[in-house]
Length: 370
Image (tube, rainbow, N blue to C red):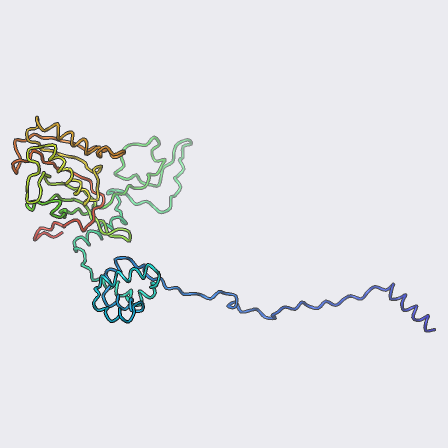
C-alpha cells in the first residue's frame, strides 16, 4: 500500500549515509593579479631651497627687494617706494620673512639661486701659489711614500717552509728588508712586519700678519711673521694656515709712535700685554699657545722685578680659574732702547693652529717662484 511504501522510504533515509557535499571554489573580489601601482604611494617631489640668511637679505639688489615687498605695500607706499634705499627695503623684507609672510619658494623665485651662485663665482680668487700649495697638501694627505730600501710584500702570505730538523724553526719565504738591522731570537721564523710609511714633505710659506693701525701703529716693520703650511678650505671652515708666529719687538707705543708712560716699567708691561692680546686674537690663539717670551729691560736691576711680576700675572690668566699656563722665559738687561723712554720690549713665539688666510699676506719676493 502507499502508506507502507512511505514508511519504508523514511526508514531507508534514516539508515543510509548522507551524500557527499560538493564544495564550490571560493570567490574573490578580483579574478586576476591586481596592478601593483594601485597600492603604491604617489611620489612627491620636494624642491629644497637654500636657507635665507641675514647676509643674503642685506646684499639683495634694490629691484629684487622691491619686487618682494610690492604685494605688502599700499598704493601710497608703492608711489613713494623709489625714495626708500636698499637698506630700508632689506629691513622691511627681513621682518616679513621672520613673520612667515614670504616663503623660501617665493624668495628664491624672485632672487634666483643661479644669481647667488654666479655672485659667489665672481669673488676674487685666491693667490695661485696658495691654491697650488693647498692642492699639494691635499694630495700628500691621501698619498704616502714607502721608506727607501724596503721590499714589496706579496698580497697573499704563503705558509713558511717546514724545517727538516724537528723542533727547529722553518725558513720564511719573506726576505728581510735591508733597512731592518739586528737579530731575532728565532731567525727566519717570523716574517717582517709592514713597511713603515713616511709622508712627503709639505710646503712651508712665510706670511706677514695683517693688523689694523689701532693694534700696530708702527709702519716701519710688521707685527710679525707666520711660517706655516696652508690648509685647504672645507664646508666647515675657510682657508687657513697652521704653523708658528714670530713677533717683532712689542713696545709701549701709542698712535703716532707716542711713548706710553715713559720710564715706568710696570705700566709699559700692561700696555705691551694688552697689545699682545689683540695680536693673539688675530691669530686665533690664547696665552696658553705662547711657546717662549724674551724681554729686553733697561736698568734690569731696578725694573726687572716689575717685569717678572707682570709676566707671572699674565701667564696665570689674571687669576682666572683654570687659565694658568707656562712658557719659556728669558729676560735680558740692555743699556737702552729706541725710542728713548721705552724701558721694556717683548718678543714672543706662538704656535698657530688655525689662523684665517684673510689675516695674512703672503710674502712673495720679486723674481722668486714659489
